[in-house]
Image 1 (cartoon, rainbow, N blue to C red):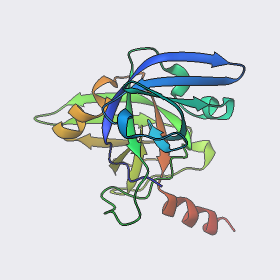
Image 2: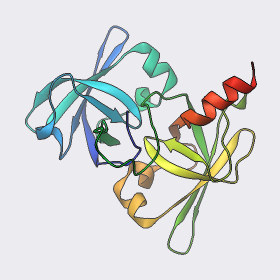
Image 3: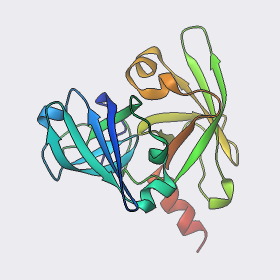
Image 4: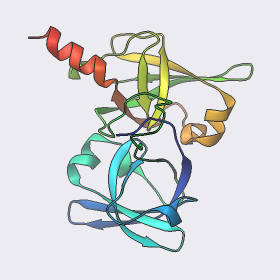
Length: 194
Protein backbone atom coordinates (compact mmCIF):
# COMPACT_ATOMS: atom_id res chain seq x y z
CA UNK A 1 0.00 0.00 0.00
CA UNK A 2 1.12 3.56 -0.75
CA UNK A 3 0.06 7.06 0.24
CA UNK A 4 0.48 9.04 -2.98
CA UNK A 5 3.16 11.23 -1.39
CA UNK A 6 6.07 11.13 -3.83
CA UNK A 7 9.46 10.50 -2.19
CA UNK A 8 11.67 11.47 -5.09
CA UNK A 9 11.93 11.73 -8.83
CA UNK A 10 13.82 9.05 -10.71
CA UNK A 11 15.33 9.28 -14.18
CA UNK A 12 14.90 6.44 -16.67
CA UNK A 13 18.38 5.35 -17.78
CA UNK A 14 17.60 2.17 -19.72
CA UNK A 15 14.63 0.37 -21.26
CA UNK A 16 14.97 -3.25 -22.34
CA UNK A 17 12.22 -5.26 -24.04
CA UNK A 18 12.08 -8.99 -23.28
CA UNK A 19 9.20 -10.77 -25.03
CA UNK A 20 6.06 -8.99 -23.72
CA UNK A 21 7.88 -7.45 -20.76
CA UNK A 22 9.70 -4.15 -20.34
CA UNK A 23 12.64 -3.89 -17.94
CA UNK A 24 13.00 -0.31 -16.72
CA UNK A 25 16.19 0.93 -15.06
CA UNK A 26 15.85 4.09 -12.98
CA UNK A 27 18.48 6.30 -11.37
CA UNK A 28 17.37 7.92 -8.11
CA UNK A 29 18.41 9.20 -4.71
CA UNK A 30 16.70 6.23 -2.99
CA UNK A 31 18.28 3.45 -5.10
CA UNK A 32 20.93 2.77 -2.44
CA UNK A 33 18.20 2.14 0.16
CA UNK A 34 16.22 -0.34 -1.93
CA UNK A 35 16.30 -4.14 -1.71
CA UNK A 36 15.65 -6.84 -4.27
CA UNK A 37 11.97 -7.91 -4.15
CA UNK A 38 10.85 -4.57 -2.68
CA UNK A 39 7.68 -2.87 -3.97
CA UNK A 40 8.12 0.63 -5.37
CA UNK A 41 5.47 2.73 -7.10
CA UNK A 42 6.63 4.16 -10.46
CA UNK A 43 4.16 6.81 -11.67
CA UNK A 44 1.69 5.09 -9.36
CA UNK A 45 2.35 1.56 -10.64
CA UNK A 46 3.49 -0.93 -7.99
CA UNK A 47 6.51 -2.80 -9.40
CA UNK A 48 9.05 -5.17 -7.84
CA UNK A 49 12.75 -4.34 -7.73
CA UNK A 50 14.59 -7.12 -9.59
CA UNK A 51 18.13 -5.67 -9.78
CA UNK A 52 20.29 -3.02 -8.12
CA UNK A 53 23.44 -1.28 -9.34
CA UNK A 54 25.29 1.92 -8.46
CA UNK A 55 22.53 4.47 -7.95
CA UNK A 56 19.98 2.56 -10.03
CA UNK A 57 17.31 -0.07 -9.68
CA UNK A 58 15.50 -2.16 -12.28
CA UNK A 59 11.86 -3.25 -12.35
CA UNK A 60 9.80 -5.24 -14.84
CA UNK A 61 6.45 -4.22 -16.30
CA UNK A 62 4.49 -7.08 -17.88
CA UNK A 63 2.25 -6.74 -20.92
CA UNK A 64 -0.92 -6.28 -18.81
CA UNK A 65 0.74 -3.38 -16.99
CA UNK A 66 1.97 -1.84 -20.23
CA UNK A 67 -1.54 -2.03 -21.71
CA UNK A 68 -3.18 -0.23 -18.76
CA UNK A 69 -0.57 2.40 -17.87
CA UNK A 70 1.71 5.02 -19.41
CA UNK A 71 4.88 3.00 -18.67
CA UNK A 72 5.08 1.79 -22.26
CA UNK A 73 5.53 5.42 -23.35
CA UNK A 74 8.69 5.92 -21.27
CA UNK A 75 11.91 7.04 -22.95
CA UNK A 76 15.45 7.28 -21.53
CA UNK A 77 15.75 10.56 -19.65
CA UNK A 78 12.06 10.68 -18.63
CA UNK A 79 11.27 11.47 -15.01
CA UNK A 80 9.18 9.03 -12.96
CA UNK A 81 7.54 9.62 -9.60
CA UNK A 82 8.83 7.15 -6.99
CA UNK A 83 7.33 6.07 -3.69
CA UNK A 84 8.27 3.11 -1.51
CA UNK A 85 5.42 1.22 0.14
CA UNK A 86 3.97 2.63 3.32
CA UNK A 87 5.18 1.46 6.71
CA UNK A 88 2.28 0.38 8.90
CA UNK A 89 3.30 2.67 11.78
CA UNK A 90 3.54 5.75 9.54
CA UNK A 91 1.14 8.62 9.01
CA UNK A 92 -1.16 8.40 6.02
CA UNK A 93 -0.39 11.86 4.60
CA UNK A 94 -2.09 11.36 1.22
CA UNK A 95 -4.82 8.74 0.84
CA UNK A 96 -4.98 4.95 0.49
CA UNK A 97 -3.26 4.08 -2.78
CA UNK A 98 -2.83 0.47 -3.90
CA UNK A 99 -0.42 1.00 -6.77
CA UNK A 100 -2.95 -0.61 -9.13
CA UNK A 101 -3.64 1.82 -11.97
CA UNK A 102 -7.25 1.73 -13.15
CA UNK A 103 -6.76 3.49 -16.47
CA UNK A 104 -4.94 6.31 -18.19
CA UNK A 105 -6.13 9.82 -18.94
CA UNK A 106 -5.07 12.56 -21.34
CA UNK A 107 -4.26 16.07 -20.22
CA UNK A 108 -6.72 18.31 -22.05
CA UNK A 109 -6.02 21.54 -20.19
CA UNK A 110 -3.08 23.23 -18.50
CA UNK A 111 -3.19 26.70 -16.94
CA UNK A 112 -0.50 28.57 -15.08
CA UNK A 113 -2.24 30.56 -12.39
CA UNK A 114 -0.85 33.14 -10.00
CA UNK A 115 1.47 30.88 -7.97
CA UNK A 116 -0.14 27.54 -8.88
CA UNK A 117 -1.12 25.35 -11.83
CA UNK A 118 -4.38 23.76 -12.91
CA UNK A 119 -4.43 20.55 -14.95
CA UNK A 120 -7.56 19.05 -16.52
CA UNK A 121 -7.63 15.37 -17.45
CA UNK A 122 -10.10 13.41 -19.57
CA UNK A 123 -10.62 9.65 -19.19
CA UNK A 124 -12.88 6.97 -20.63
CA UNK A 125 -16.00 7.24 -18.46
CA UNK A 126 -17.40 4.02 -19.96
CA UNK A 127 -15.08 2.04 -17.67
CA UNK A 128 -17.25 3.04 -14.70
CA UNK A 129 -14.65 4.95 -12.68
CA UNK A 130 -15.82 8.13 -11.00
CA UNK A 131 -14.44 11.15 -9.21
CA UNK A 132 -16.19 13.33 -6.65
CA UNK A 133 -15.72 17.00 -5.94
CA UNK A 134 -13.01 17.45 -3.28
CA UNK A 135 -12.39 13.69 -3.28
CA UNK A 136 -9.04 11.99 -3.79
CA UNK A 137 -7.47 10.90 -7.06
CA UNK A 138 -4.04 9.48 -7.76
CA UNK A 139 -2.39 10.95 -10.89
CA UNK A 140 0.97 9.39 -11.83
CA UNK A 141 1.16 8.18 -8.24
CA UNK A 142 0.46 11.61 -6.70
CA UNK A 143 -2.36 11.95 -4.17
CA UNK A 144 -4.39 14.96 -5.32
CA UNK A 145 -7.74 16.61 -4.62
CA UNK A 146 -10.36 16.65 -7.38
CA UNK A 147 -11.91 19.92 -8.53
CA UNK A 148 -14.45 20.34 -11.36
CA UNK A 149 -15.52 16.68 -11.23
CA UNK A 150 -17.45 15.62 -14.34
CA UNK A 151 -18.57 12.29 -15.85
CA UNK A 152 -15.30 11.71 -17.72
CA UNK A 153 -13.00 14.53 -16.65
CA UNK A 154 -11.70 16.42 -13.65
CA UNK A 155 -9.16 19.06 -12.73
CA UNK A 156 -6.53 19.32 -10.03
CA UNK A 157 -4.84 22.39 -8.58
CA UNK A 158 -1.10 22.04 -8.01
CA UNK A 159 0.98 23.95 -5.47
CA UNK A 160 4.57 24.96 -6.33
CA UNK A 161 6.14 22.25 -4.12
CA UNK A 162 4.23 19.45 -5.88
CA UNK A 163 4.98 20.94 -9.30
CA UNK A 164 8.70 21.13 -8.56
CA UNK A 165 9.06 17.70 -6.91
CA UNK A 166 6.98 15.52 -9.27
CA UNK A 167 6.88 14.82 -12.98
CA UNK A 168 3.78 17.02 -13.35
CA UNK A 169 6.34 19.65 -14.30
CA UNK A 170 6.61 17.82 -17.65
CA UNK A 171 2.88 17.19 -18.22
CA UNK A 172 1.28 19.30 -20.93
CA UNK A 173 -1.83 19.06 -23.13
CA UNK A 174 -1.71 15.66 -24.84
CA UNK A 175 0.37 13.95 -22.12
CA UNK A 176 -0.88 10.54 -20.93
CA UNK A 177 -1.03 10.00 -17.16
CA UNK A 178 -1.91 7.07 -14.92
CA UNK A 179 -5.06 7.22 -12.78
CA UNK A 180 -5.93 5.25 -9.69
CA UNK A 181 -9.38 6.17 -8.45
CA UNK A 182 -10.17 6.31 -4.74
CA UNK A 183 -10.55 2.76 -3.36
CA UNK A 184 -13.41 3.73 -1.05
CA UNK A 185 -15.28 5.28 -3.97
CA UNK A 186 -14.71 2.13 -6.04
CA UNK A 187 -16.18 -0.11 -3.31
CA UNK A 188 -19.18 2.20 -2.81
CA UNK A 189 -19.84 2.26 -6.58
CA UNK A 190 -19.63 -1.55 -6.72
CA UNK A 191 -22.07 -1.95 -3.82
CA UNK A 192 -24.51 0.52 -5.40
CA UNK A 193 -24.54 -1.54 -8.60
CA UNK A 194 -25.60 -4.73 -6.77
